[in-house]
Image (cartoon, rainbow, N blue to C red; front, side, top):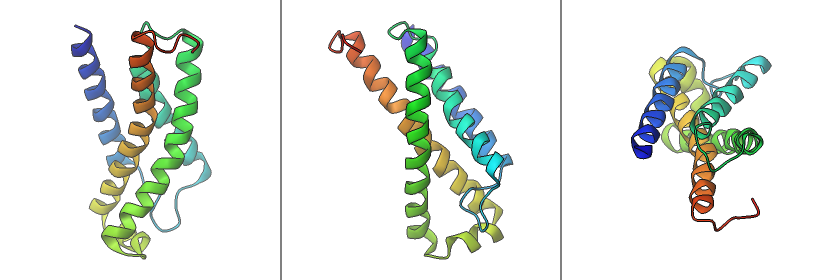
Length: 140
């Protein structure tokens, strides 16, 4: 039963990220995005990790919020760095001009960014949950 709920939560997260990627500008396009959009992007990286970890019983509420925020922040930074590297490999060093001209490439860049960022924010939570369920990490 828990695996079914886990799969449904992951599908909901992927659906939200795909829709968000379709309707927003890419942070890697020429000129980037404004400052407030960076806060919105950080929110849309933090929210799925909170949605994923909230029903788990192996974490207390403070741990859920704290771990989600910390891992989401680092996921945001790692996602931006890896996305730039992937885009440079695909489009060359002038990828920002290509993204500005092609809407499909901008959506692809958004998907790469959000999927890497959320993998970096939800992945450590899954690892910690696995260890806590096995009682390996009793201090955490």
